[in-house]
Length: 154
Image (cartoon, rainbow, N blue to C red; front, side, top):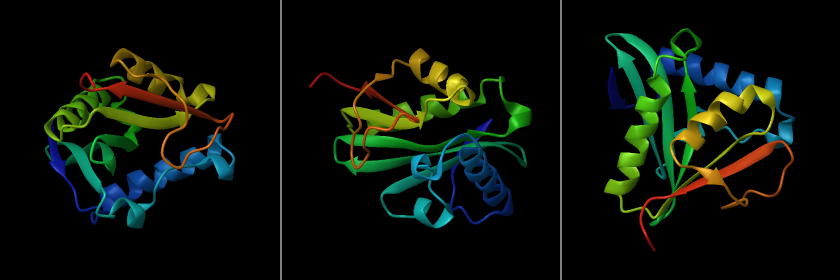
């Protein structure tokens, strides 16, 4: 597996992110869908990566800089055929390492509260993320779970 920074211009990533947005809309009411589209992910505050096995796209994720000490994980998605094979862990470890390189004190994320999001929550718990209060511009939402992980002692 190879992780590379991606410019979000390839048809494979457009399809994966389209599937991601469709899936979020399927499981969450519109006001609770916080996934970013292609244009928003191209913003300068975001770094976007894809995971590949030769020419096969396996997964994607972004890291959004909220401020110089705090990053948010966005659009983490694994292609369904490759789930349960360690791809998401590989990507999450990359993001955590990047957070350390950037000297972030904290990484946070928002995910769904519904059963469909249970595997994602389990992965984040496994990597030391804990439930937290809404951060950045988020507000309390029964359809959202907010999670955070400290990266260094304050």
